[in-house]
Image (cartoon, rainbow, N blue to C red; front, side, top):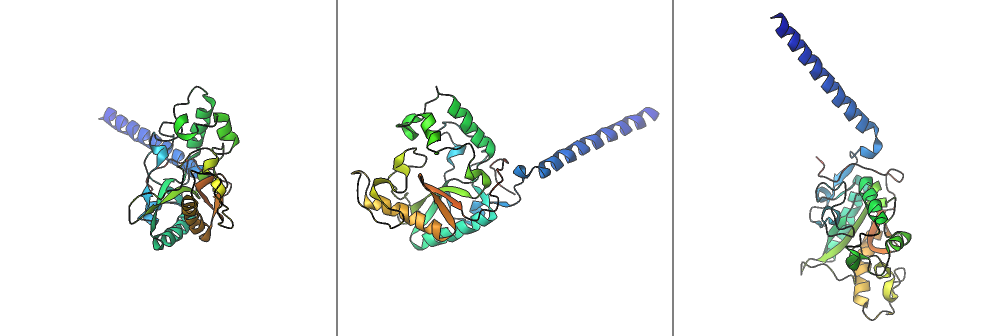
Length: 254
């Protein structure tokens, strides 16, 4: 009986230590602001009709592998950015479009994965599909990929629009994550500021430029700012965490 009590006491002590360790671990995560997802939301909870094609959860991306930190094919944003995105989505819906999301919040561990890929000069498996005219160095020099990404601050999104009548993506004259001048909003003779178009590239049309501007105008009307070298990329002007680069994984928030 005496030994049984001693064993029970020892087990209770071990359970207490395990609980203390877990509590300490949870506390450490809370104290690390980059692991705090409390101010983020699932975009589809805010914009239920958003279509998701989360490229970095798949292998169809410029790295050619699932990116670190993407545990589920979901899209997350800060609450403020998601609310503004909802307003832009409603605007576009009135014009006959719904939004399609390629990427939103991106953990720093995902950006670190990009960096490791950049250093392996022998890995050019996806070059023909995403950067046929550039070297890996030029991809980074041209700021198509950065060591610090606005996506990691939680208020940036990569997206396009879908025609609700046809169910097809609108022709933007280029694809997501194509690294080159073809992805610049002013490519082919267009002026995003005046909306004037004077064709300078035979294969890029006024309709493709106009489609880019439909997306751009809606996002700008609702508080986002564009990027000079990617027609699909927008960041909330008044982002709530301008100096925090988060690192919690991409998975459904409960």
